[in-house]
Length: 280
Image (tube, rainbow, N blue to C red):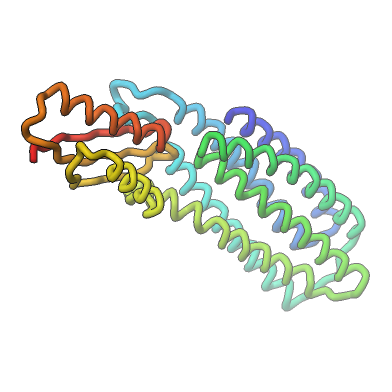
């Protein structure tokens, strides 16, 4: 996961430098939208790097459940930063729509966008691999930014071509608004997931269905109740009461519970599982 974070920071810094030059020379609001997004990629990647180091720390005396909750805090902060910046872009674009101005050095903007698309595609492929392996909320959030960057760079190219070759001065601010709204929409799921985790929202129903299916395969468990689930970052927490034959000995009941715990940990790697046996 750390290698993926290093890669995203390096790519983001390089893209910010390139896009800053292209925006300064072209005065394109679409390029400014893409630059702002890349700038926040740098900021969030740095936040992710710090948060990831903290989240990987093992549980200690002050944090018995570990430190993975920091992923949700950072994810929610990222969402707030992104939405605030995109609202500013929308206001600037609305002003430009009422007072359109011609752009300069559009060829440079197109070239920078093509370079940015190529670099971003390579990074997205790598982050996709890491996110699937680790199921990290931080890496998934970072990947989401760069998936959007590919489309945004394409949007910048379209806006620059329409403005430069066809004289459609409204294309640049209009594309900037579209890109800003798209960024806000794509960030919504990240913010909602982080908020739900902080509020101890239950696991998705498809994941809870895996728990139900597992319990049905264990004949020694006659019933279950008080099932509670949640996530802290990418760490699952599962607890429940299970009913077993009242005539079972203590060791037999313990072995059944232990098998269930191990099976749940196989389905949800790294899960914290607490099971209370009840005599039936």
